[in-house]
Length: 136
Image (cartoon, rainbow, N blue to C red; front, side, top):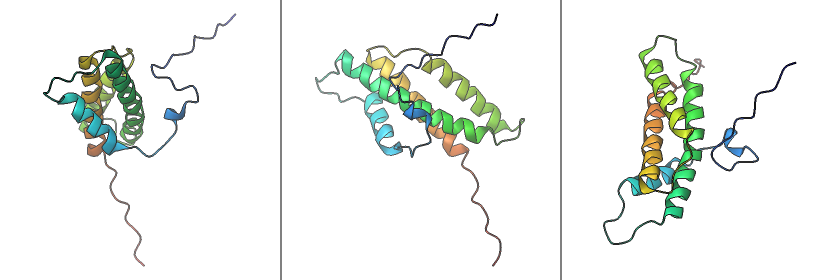
């Protein structure tokens, strides 16, 4: 008798699994959010725990989408390519961080913000070469 493994739970609330689809990334907005979280205003305003958790969830969901794009591009590289080895290491760390539900703290949101920035750095490093058009 075979038993089916339990379904893997996703951290974010995505019942329609829209984050698994290929969608254009809203890079600018998420990098601005990451920068704001990493460099919070110095005035007396503080983020409430619920705000920190919501920001961390937003960044975690976006990080999953970016990681999937990085993973697709990484798979196109030769097995021993140094870019692939580094990217696989970054993706492993991303998977580890994203497997834990964010806490309602600023450091937790900052952790996700740093992850977004790292994933975009890898994505940029794996830019596909422009396709050369045949001569006309």
